[in-house]
Length: 276
Image 1 (cartoon, one colour):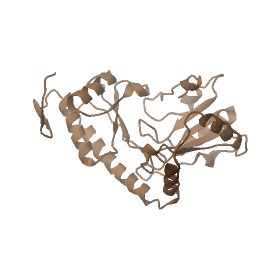
Image 2 (tube, one colour; image 1 turned 90 degrees about the horizontal axis):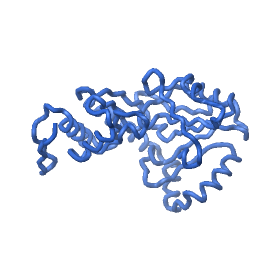
Image 3 (cartoon, rainbow, N blue to C red; image 1 turned 180 degrees about the horizontal axis):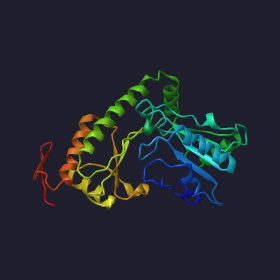
Image 4 (cartoon, rainbow, N blue to C red; image 1 turned 120 degrees about the horizontal axis):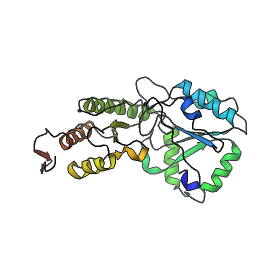
């Protein structure tokens, strides 16, 4: 998206090898041409949720440097282990029309309304006016029906969000447990979202080739880590049912573990292991 508007995206990978950047990691990548910082927490693909202190620090840093801070909060209510959503405005000192803080959210994740394509931005009025002028010529025309449905979700009973969150947390626990028993796979337990970003480089450092292998051989869909700047990793979704998760991991094991049986059944379809 940055490239589409002529910007140059600069990725920040934590120096310590985790999925949790420090303010110092970002400071070192900010230069004289930097205009904005984008933070996605909980994060896609890692599922990492950044600490309140980090959010407070990055808000203060961007205010001092006069940088736009774009907070992608699309997964903010899908968090686990007792975590609570963090409101970046709690740490902002400039709440005037000069504020460069922008919060992005939508109904896709928290209300499981991915196909509706309804979202919003919160920012100062002048910026929103400019954004509206541009957006109106790019992605306009969400139907009145979908807008009404989104309003109903936002203003309605919120128990469905908590139900979804609890289901996803249980799904995460099952997925992580299965992956941790997978020889050679390194797993970070997601703090939120519905993705797990696991290191499969033990089996193949080329994540695109590995993802294609799993799709072709056992019909399991993953996203190559190279698409997120981390080769050897695979992004795995756990938003399906428990049966889908357990069966998917078993298929992956069969496809990758050389000690697996020679045959596997997917429904009535018999697969023969013809690779090493």
